[in-house]
Structure formats: structure tokens, C-alpha cells
Image 1 (cartoon, rainbow, N blue to C red):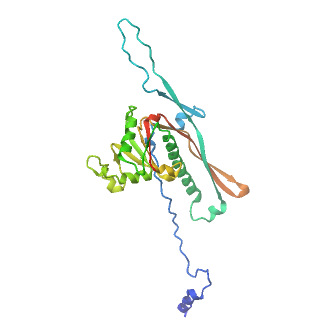
Image 2 (image 1 turned 180 degrees about the horizontal axis):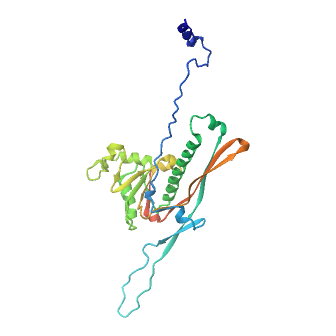
Image 3 (image 1 turned 60 degrees about the vertical axis):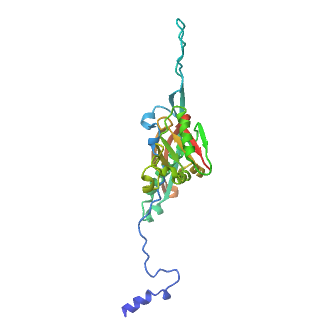
Length: 287
């Protein structure tokens, strides 16, 4: 009798539309968003932090030796030796402030299955990391030379960009590519030839690891200043190309808004990325 009664209650035909007769299990797991491909700080000439910049006010100057200054000349016997000295130049880093404000109602935090505040802080940290990659790409866009490719990047485009650096005495060490260019690299048969092969990583991971001695780095178009950046590539000499200066590292300041019954946090950073030597970078564009 009892069993029949339970069956009756569990019959969907006897239920009220929209009512769950059987409890619905919600898995208490939050799946994180995918991590984007970002540019590693090791690609910069250097990264200076707050400890090194605490006494530099709102800007910071880097001194550079100007290339190819000072000339040796033939001097005749008894003639005056020509006077010449080295020239210098500076690059100014300006510490721009970036931030995001997180606000959560007390009810959201009380009723949620998850630690929403901590999750939102982690989300903010991802966005700041993506912003750093964005700033690097904006800086690299100031490259001294541009190689205009066609619908797909070619071997000639890459080698020409390398030559652009070598003509100015720089050593091409890395190539930074968007997703469209990476797809082009995967489809260039030349890189499967034994004397030019990028390595087994191409077949194991789908990533061309090295091209003519250049380390290949991919960036996510969703971390770029615009989606058109996925069509670009940048060949650079990492010992000379750009620097990162961080006046204030990622900072979290908690606050409350009693009149709104909210709690929140202000997450900020002061950072700048500057191209040090434009001739140490060559940009490749595709369409």
C-alpha cells in the first residue's frame, strides 16, 4: 500500500506542471573559464617592480646608448685626431593606472554555494594578466619595420623580418604570433623538412616550437587590443626589444557599502610597457 502511494506521488502525470516531484541534484562544482595564452615576462628585456621604482614618482626614464655613434677615422701623420663621443637617448615609462571594482550583495554571498568573492578576485587577476599582454602587443606595434604578407604568412615573410633585425645588428630570437598566423605555420610544408623542422612538438602538441631558430609564442586574440591582431606576427630580439615597469603591483582593497548592503573590492595596478628599441622588432601582417 505504501509502495503504491509513493509510486502515485512520483507519477509525472499526477504532478503539477513546473513542479519537480523528484529532487534535482545540482553538482556543487564550478568549472573555471579557460586560461588564455599570454606572453611570458621572460620575453621582456627586464621587468622592474615596485621595490625598484618606489622613488621614481609618476614616471621612469631608461637610458639607452644610441646605436652606431662614435666613428673611427683615418688620421694623417701629425694631424689632429678627430673628436667624437657616444650619444644617448631615453625612453620614458608612464605609470598608468588600471582597475576593476567588484561589488557583491550580502544575499549573493549568503545564498551562493561558492565563495563568490574569492572567485571574482581570481577573475580580476586573470584580466590584469591579459591586460599586460595587451600592453606588450601595443608596444610591439611600434616596430621600426613591417613586412606585408598576403592571405597567409610565408617563409619569405619570416626570413625578411629576421633580416630586418640582422641589418641593424640585432639577433632575432623569438617570434610572437596570433592564431591565424599559427595556423599558417602549421600548413607550411617546409617546416616538415628535416633541415628546417620545428621539432616533434608540432605533431605532439599542434604547436610549432621553433622556426629557423626562433622560439614561437602564441597569444590569445581575446587578450589582444583587437581581434585583428591574430593576423600579426612579431620577430624580435628579446635582449633589446621592450621593458615592463610596474609601479604598483596587483593590489586588492576591500570596502563595504552599508547603504546598499554590499561588500566589494577595488583591484588596481600601475604599469607601463614600452618599446626600448624599435629596430629590434619587425612586424609581419597578413590579411
